[in-house]
Image (cartoon, rainbow, N blue to C red; front, side):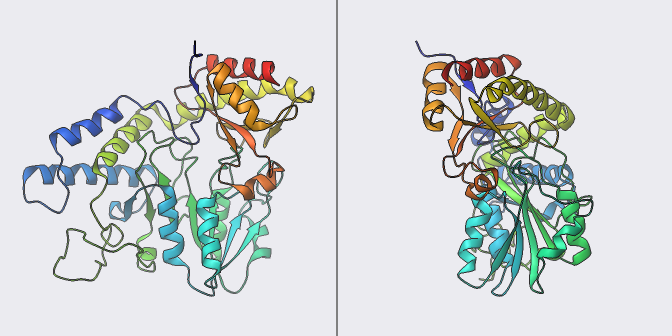
Length: 390
């Protein structure tokens, strides 16, 4: 008999979703169905109203300045590509942390062939960035051609939260563009573009915003939008008399029909997060993380594993990675799944730079990531399984 499934891979995608998410998607597909900007009838207007409502709520949720500057994409990777490749030109230089995901690093490596350069800000072995208030330490990494700082808000490998507010203040003082990747924090930690001096924020819908896969986006300051080259061009349903892309937002970056069922689902997920409250969600995930870390401590002391990243719940999300010391990580993860029904992620997590910082390269680690629907019993089951196989 297969063991009960315990899903601990919420950093990859949240599961299960609130019941309202698939319901909203089904309602849209069965009761509305139309595209926006491409029909002069009630269903098309209903679709437009739904999209505007979600756009407006996302703007308020993230402290943006204008709902029109909320742009929908397929996911955070697409958003980061549009921001990075739309902004940077040959000769530009940018700063990144050493904890970045490949959604940031691969576009930059591609652009390096065209004359864009980057410098990694070294982080500590626990994933934290060694800066003080206002991040004056970043001055040492600046060059005359530095254009921007691009940074993850929290590591997808070990959960360590980076000092986005301090880096944003530094960027504001130095006239740099600050782009923040919120893939691991949106829906768990407060993110306010105005308060944190964020010029462009990339988000995804399918993680802690509890929406479906295939929907994400970015929010941008209006003055920055005009400086970005749109990477995708095509029909927008607006000013169709011209073959040039519109200059106004959000049409400047939204070519082709939007993923409207995905937006409906994202709206339902966001509503669940708002009603539950970020504080309650964060407290729940921190409590589970604390239980897990406490249970791992004896195993680490016995030399059976190494906890990757911070040893406490302070300054981290509900993501905990371990490096088994008695067996191969892939074998341990397979046993967790097959024998105990514990669903985790093993490997390098699309973040080789982070793993090099954390000293888990090239073997990688096993990642446990807790979500709002996990329970203390799930944590206990994972710990019991680890005690058995390590």
